[in-house]
Length: 223
Image 1 (cartoon, rainbow, N blue to C red):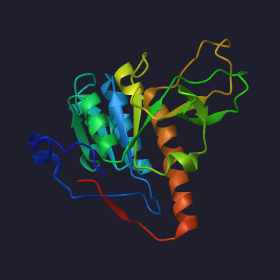
Image 2: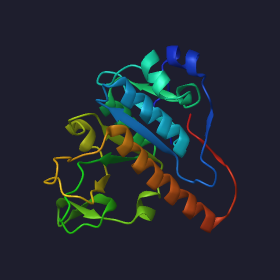
Image 3: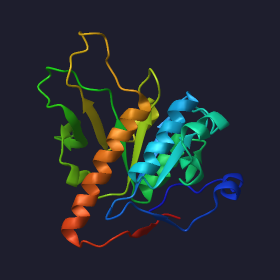
Image 4: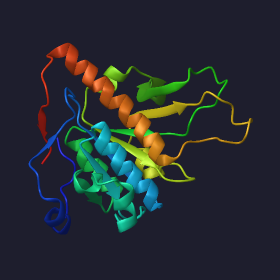
């Protein structure tokens, strides 16, 4: 089970670890995939959140995202020096190779609507086939955590690209408390959304681990 390896030039900078430490008690490796995040402040914020909340790595779509510039590194508050960052030149090939190795893709989709009948918070769903037709239905977080996960988050003002969404088996949605009609706020900052999703999944993984064996920090082979 592995993401695509780092290019040689990135490995020379980041190092080439054979294992990645997980958050204490966590059992499910979680890699954040940033797509179309062009603001260096938002990118640095994602790195900071991913590191702080226990993600194993950040995968960066180099064709659509801002580079890890000095501004992004500064916004990461030092996390860019500690969190492995994978340079992804082609998102489709990266995801296909990862899925073939046992990973599953979770796509962050547009926030729900207040008053839509959904409870405030985070909703998870899964793509399944019913009678030969592909449908998406809600699922429990424990079902998602059966696999190592690549959580794909789109950038400012646009959703994830179709070539990423169509490779997702799972979807995650943040449901608002207030209506967009109040002042026109219809979404979250991408780094904030990534932090909420990451915290939800890592915390759930830690709770599952505590129920199973109660061990401390463990490692998973990713390369």
